[in-house]
Length: 346
Ligand code: NAP
Ligand code: ZN
Image (tube, protein in one colour):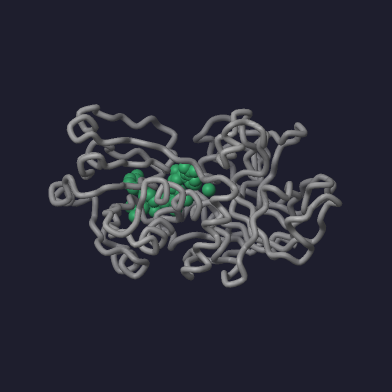
């Protein structure tokens, strides 16, 4: 099947319309007519070559919502007409200890990313900036009815990437949680941490988005450009989730953790981050990382978001606005996720 898509032809080059091939629907596959695809900063890191060489042309997009239009003979989990989602992962071995434990994203054989990855049949995966995609049914999520399709798309990456560490490190009533960076991931983290019952603080570069941050569910909001912020908040937080796409001064942020506090990095800048061990040993602090979340947890997150009426704040764009949207994300000028109406590719 040949379908319309938007692809980056080479590292750092603007995305342009193209036609790609989707595989035939196998016994355990579903064919999805894509309605919306979110733009994640990871798409930009990938096509700009921040994370190393890629198998260009690359069709990005791992925040996909659409409708099932065909199912393979062995599929029982999804039916034609169902509204579904696909996140950052479209396959894994299913047999290793991590897959069996529901941590398919940490598959020992390597999980298959939704784009720029090598699928288990040897083909290169292509993502959601496209009209259709064929995905193994086990990696396809159900999108609850109560959620708006466009606003639900970012949950498939930004939602699960922040839900997973917030749950794992116990964000909830009585805990003080800080979110660093109020972008796509950050704004989801604020909403989810608030819904989990934590006391939420936004740490943003400036006060420009303060009103938004408080409206989204934060209790406090500070500008990290103000050095007083780091003195005022020293030793305050149980958990800090860093969503920043660039290098930050980790030691300054570690100093904001209470004894036994944890800073979880989900931001994935190209450059290494330095840590002075005294920032950790001086208060038994931890520095951790987390990558998206397993399939069962992703479904749990979608159901949680529907139950709490949480979805992304989105700016819906047509496919030909993708390059402009990338520029705006790079300038931290996104409120708070661009989502492509993939109908504009038809
Ligand atoms: P985004 O929408 O661009 O948000 C990043 C935010 O970080 C910006 O809005 C800005 O917030 C802040 N920021 C940007 N540059 C900064 C700088 N130089 N110094 C300080 N703060 C800065 O990006 P996103 O889509 O949320 O993704 C964020 C990062 O997470 C990316 O690196 C992405 O690749 C990564 N990611 C990781 C996973 C995972 O599984 N671990 C999954 C998805 C994405 P303020 O304006 O509020 O300061
Ligand atoms: Zn992403």
